[in-house]
Length: 193
Image (cartoon, rainbow, N blue to C red; front, side, top):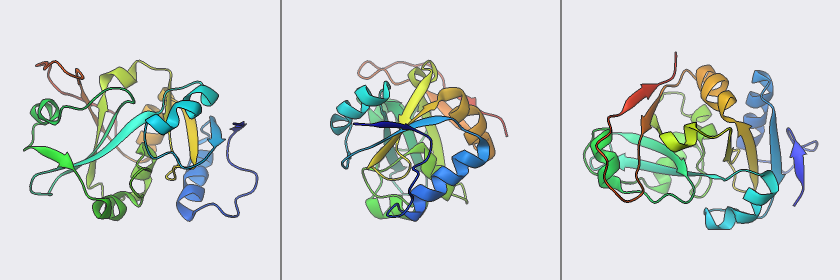
């Protein structure tokens, strides 16, 4: 698998969403590495990508409350399991579940398997709240898709949590997910507007 610096030289055949992501990153002067590959809709399918880019791909889960009135995009380390009860207690909200593919397309303009923090670019009404597991904040880089699961990007965390989210006028909620054991640590709000 080849790794490239920046956007593809040839954009024909790329989706409009993917092209808009590259335009947005270029506009902000974001430096990133990219790998193109077969569709990788799960963390398990990303192992080879992790090795090529030298970063662990982030798990992106699109969640909603029971009434489907609140939507969340949760970023967590790829191998960390999610305990929705633990997360619900930290936000706080009613019981969480996975949102539908239709809701994902409506709010983030991506299909299941392509969820990514970069899809917040298309949530102009800011209906989706961003949740970030604190473990990701200790990493130097984050691995994510550019709104399609046939390419993956390696972006510096300081660029994502600084420049990108700031340009999108987005805050995020830091959560502590134990991956098994419940922990009563309080939620912190991060990010500047």
